[in-house]
Amino acid sequence: MNRTPYATASTIPTEAIPAEAAPADALGTSAARTRSAELEKLVREDPGRFRVLTGDRPTGRLHLGHYFGTLHNRVRLQDLGVEMTVLIADYQVLTDRDVADQLPRHVEDLTLDYLAAGIDPARATVFPHSAVPALNQLLLPFLSLVSVAELNRNPTVKDEIAHSRQSAVSGLMFTYPVHQAADILFCKANLVPVGQDQLPHLEVTRTVARRFNDRYGRGTAVFPEPEALLSSAPLLLGTDGTKMSKSRGNAIALAAGVDETARLIKGARTDSDRHITYDPAGRPEVSSLVLLAALCEDRDPRQVADEIGTAGAGALKKRVTEAVNERLAPIRARRAAYERDRGYVRQVLREGAARANAMADATLDEVRRAMNGYS
Ligand code: TRP
Image 1 (spheres, rainbow, N blue to C red):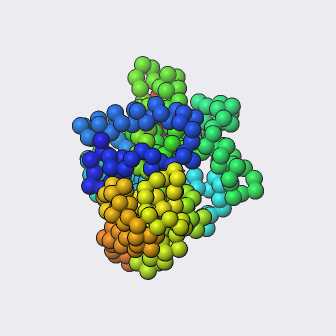
Image 2 (cartoon, rainbow, N blue to C red):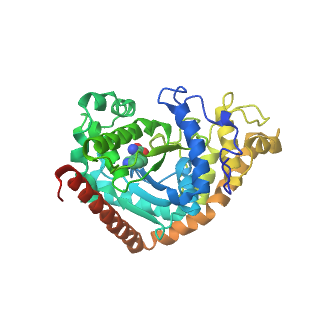
Image 3 (cartoon, rainbow, N blue to C red):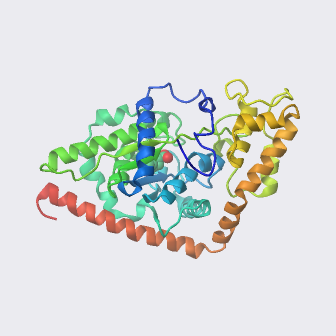
């Protein structure tokens, strides 16, 4: 069970995970879920055994869905004492959108959100992958280890091509799961917290590691075969009842102000039944608001719903607004302080990149020695 100061899988009933999630085993999800529960236990018993690598595409400000879905979990892992590397995938974001001119800003904004949420640069390495040449050079030997047919089959890539905002599919789109293997293996991470859409990519990473070891390792493993740590957090819906996403205009940003938050929640979709219940399948919009209050208050959503009872959607929204604003207050205060000190944010990135470069240089040396007998 998750023992964290706030609500996670231990207090949220599993029906909170909406039905729109992929069919149970399309991506090997149920096996990964079982294994993740074991890994959770191992992490708590012996955090020093784990090197965690996580990452995000810098697409702008993070929202509450990110916070409860991933950020909060990273801070928890960091605080448990695992070695933590947080990668900003500033090349990968170019796979499906033309944002090159906004990247420096987005990288900094993402870093601000990390710092505000509690990622501690003294313990975690935060850096953009474009700043680490040796990491990127790993892409070449790794590409030689996968077939075009394998690249073509990746269901997450197929899905992203279907929803791409670019008119043509770039070569980077097809190869980015292999680049992601370089993201993970450059620091020899053995644990990768991800959502289930990332499981195919983690399989690519494991395949690359295995094939590299088999082909060049001479009996020793150069790379670990990293495992997925599936998030047990329930998915928060946006204010319109669909998946929370900035591009849908239904998200509450971590950096949103108190009034903006109140306005967004006031406009959230509900239904006409004044009796508030927690029933994610039957009443997704109302239930997501209940869940949001529960996550912010570290409570069971059914209890929150019971407390509101027949007071109606207005009372529910008032409760959610207060809960969100209270929970985010310290995060927002930190974010505002860092925002006034962008020089510090850039320094965090420079120091993160220096540490990442040292790790990547050492790994690339090892790779060249394994492949060529010299480095
Ligand atoms: N593909 C991830 C996403 O779209 C981002 C990412 C890039 C990543 N490199 C990674 C995630 C390495 C985990 C590990 O969100």
